[in-house]
Length: 420
Image 1 (spheres, rainbow, N blue to C red):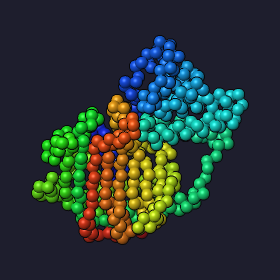
Image 2: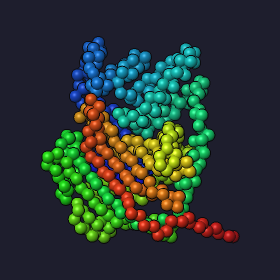
Image 3: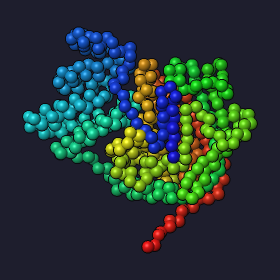
């Protein structure tokens, strides 16, 4: 049920049941010293002028430094003028809360309501925006801002399709219950293709591979490719689920290795067919806030895009993101938020040093339907980054394809009821 991506150097992990993060503010290394030095010397006007001269990435990461100066000086209004010109940060949300508190003290209910609402919006942005850091310890602040906003008359806009969303979530929960209680036994082919571009400096910084041995290396483009073909088996028996792999081919050469582990650098797959349960299983509606984002159709019928964002963080490891569902509640595709990566803050820091923004994709597709159950057909993990011009740099990509399914058992378990 887990999808894990780890870099030994940075302990980077990705998965549907283990996620989380903590880090102090990380800013572009080359942009910090001059602004900070000017502020330490009390030369605020010069720091302000320098921020105003900067453009693009440099400006986005310089304005929060100036905002922090005014925030620590207990001048939230001036701090917010700076924060709104740069990348959102936690202190920006706190500044909105500070400004809201002052409005309440002087009896300005409308002003306080607006500012608490703005604080809540910043916290939501910290969760969703790839440029921003998020620490689960900040979640109580996020919920407090929302609570104060609601107490002062703030009202969430109830979508017209809220009833439709509720019914869809009921069907998704029923689907996950069926998935969890079914006997599943099958074979399939699992082909893994892994490519890394070593011409990009950030690839070296992230140490994406421990070795280049056993790979196709294309000298002309400095790309390394590794291809593995496995015979994959999942078996449900006596209430337990196990999976096995037999390596058939390695880079086109016969391997015939029994009981093989998945040989993909820094990735581990664990019973991925059960991944939808983490987001839509029984009891998850107490943990997540869901939004219906979009509807479309494909050759198999309607598809509905639903966002799942944590309301609370009961553990340090929380998955969240977006999923495409069929009308019957079956999950067709899961797209995890980048902050579903354990240690993602290290990736973010490396990106900032290179003046890049992460554009990491973690996608699982369950496109094979059999007896109402969705089976994995593809997994894609892309380590991509955007430069200052908005161009995408693809550092590493792993594509995993599942095909040629052979089913032995796919049926509901019969629950035994004890009679006293």
